[in-house]
Length: 452
Image 1 (tube, rainbow, N blue to C red):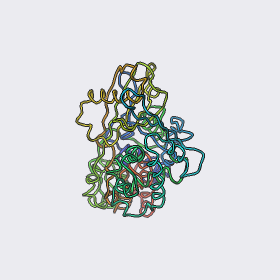
Image 2: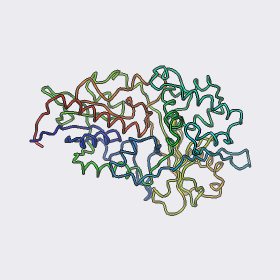
Image 3: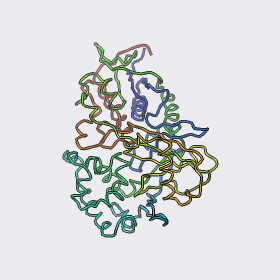
Image 4: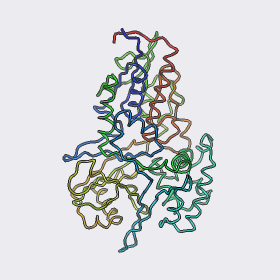
């Protein structure tokens, strides 16, 4: 017999992994159920001609403290790199026959919000008069209260225009950050989430936006490392098992597939959670589909020689948004492998992968002169149609908190009410919040004893 409560976690993405480990560390018996044959959710890797390829490029910031803590918990902290200071090369194609124009967003030793003032004043992709106007919007953002519900009533783009920001400023500065973090351009993104990104990442702590990334394939960083951590914590993992519904059981607990558990955490995408949860478990459950989807496309280009020394770069006035050097993590020993990440990319899904790879390769030649001399020896395209929820105005009321209407049942996922956009940090935060909530319920309800 066991007096330890049994918690079932449905979903093996970052939120489910965080919830399972939090519950196990608190003393519960935990069973994690995942429909795929792997852990890690939307952060995964696959093999291509002997190389390890990530489905997408997932970075984090120094302010992502819960995610960094999660990496430490699964023994993966040494597998990532974190910039000592934010430093982003920003490249624009030059006029026909001219070299590209290179700027730099680099933080100084000044306190927030002045750490980027010097690099923004020298920023070559925006006229000086427009650069000087950036401060007006930055100061207004600092004054916003993130708990103000009216921020979710307007787009970030409308708010920027009302605060003197030109289309050029939006394209070359504001969307440089908004698109990859919110997965929508400012013209569509809710002011609430965009304001959270800028206030938390740039305006309150000078070091908050330093960028970190994995030095190993994401499948190894999250899936493999977490698998070991789960086993060491005594968590039972069931892969390839789909849970169709979680239902309360008369007398206490929940039926989770063929499991009986004292408590459960549903850590699934919002479309699936709406059907798996008991009816009425969360507010607006029948409307969760309205959270929608926003996609991310990655174009993977393999060159016969190195074409850049930068580990990452951003682009403006180009179909390219962000570029990451994934040569080392993939296992490539000759040439260079660059992954081009394009967020908010719904319009690219109809384009043939080979045509898209050629178009992006040509665009990269206009940004990196060395690429013009190199040969693309291989390419592929990966697409995540449902990469994140669609963070438009009106989204906030549809994002439920971890606690459901049933004691000992919680919901987790980057789409829940974490206060963050759909990021790895938000996913980990949601999983830990769900774990804390179910344990709060278990302290008030007798635990069902069963054979361990």
